[in-house]
Picture 1 (cartoon, one colour):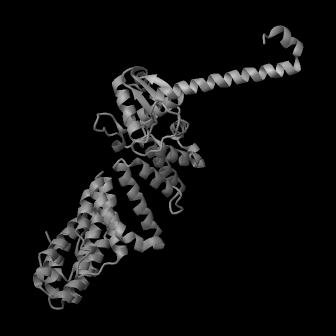
Picture 2 (spheres, one colour):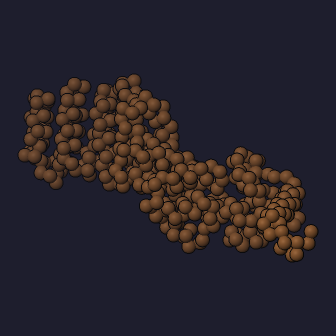
Picture 3 (spheres, rainbow, N blue to C red):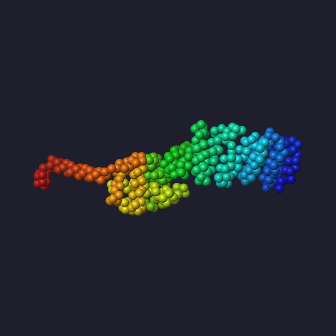
Length: 420
């Protein structure tokens, strides 16, 4: 119920609206108790729009009303009263086009309250209602970017990377104009892009983006180390191959990595060492839910990354191995091990060939290029025979060299002990 003093003040305000409303709003603490504040502010709004005072008067009173609401620091009131005022503006066609700035300020206020209450979806929706390309209102590129970044971040808090990416694409059209004029906004843009890449499982790109952000002087040391940690996680989850190896190399060279919990698995992957199940399980505990989501074949992103890594590590240990033996090493059955190997060879992430008749995989020591179809090798068995011949020849040459040295140093011994 509206406070009696507010009702009385509203009746007097009609004589001189600008002064009357301003006096009421400036003295609202004397007229309206705190528990009735929201109700009284909505009553003032209804009275203002019902009286049809005109654009100039309405705009002036609304500005004072928004200031009072903002200064109240009552987030529930921001949502309740702010939404009421926005509806009043929208339902008055003769004034709505002239009050775009006031409606936009109110929507930002409401969004801030929703963000404080961690209702990020509601915040994103109310911000999306702000007209940024309206003919009645000129909005700078910086103001557009400010709103779009808030929308992107709110959608990311809700794990809605698809909608967030839509607004990020809008941001790309204006961020190059802002440049380094606003380092904080540029940082939020880069971080949002990295988070979207991470959510979309573009782990190599995300690792690179997070790593770049970790050098930013605009954030605290703790935050820089956190983004470095995220870069390592994304690099570990990326598809095994030469591109990931380069990403792991950059992160391993970063001296700060040695102080992070993820350094153990980073080092093992960088040196192509086999990962144990205990190490993988410990690492999984630090991952976000989307990083543990299942892929189309029913395995998790982490499980697939570990299998592919261990497969590359096996290629460093063996020149050839049977399907079943490799499956035992990877924790898969023989057919699945062959399928995984064939896929990596086809994608150019592993070099080698497969003998499906004898069920043997031949690994080639050459570095994979990462180009599709570049992992195939031909006449693998012939290469093995030639390699054996070369090794035998090298051994024979070493024996002959040792014999010559002995003959030069101990001719009598050679004459009696070694048949020529």
